[in-house]
Length: 114
Image 1 (spheres, rainbow, N blue to C red):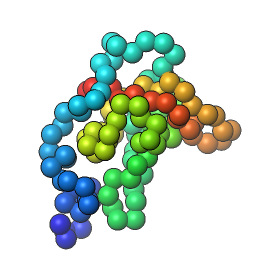
Image 2 (image 1 turned 90 degrees about the vertical axis):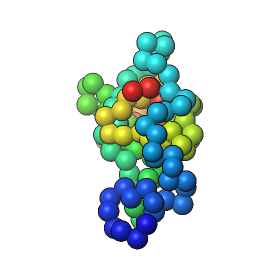
Image 3 (image 1 turned 45 degrees about the vertical axis):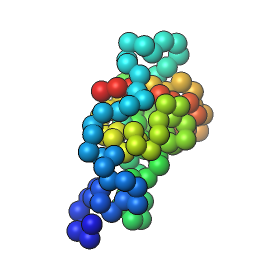
Image 4 (image 1 turned 90 degrees about the horizontal axis):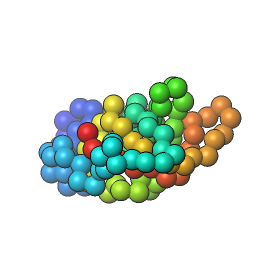
């Protein structure tokens, strides 16, 4: 727990066992997604001052547009799935607010099974 390494799961106040299983329990299959969703890939997670996983991330779509995604707007995500997400995982964004010169602020999103 005291070893200073990036993403040390033992430093988290949450149960470290949730990190052990790579299976996302609440994700949807990519072929189940219909409608106006935009597919994005996670590019990085924000770090908090303790080095644990923060509750927001940044993702990009195929056109290299950037999206700001907060855990609370992932409809099918709980903390135990959030900690299993990795850079490169896909999300399906349904709605977002655009601010000129900044990442799109996502207001509705789904996790996709990998």
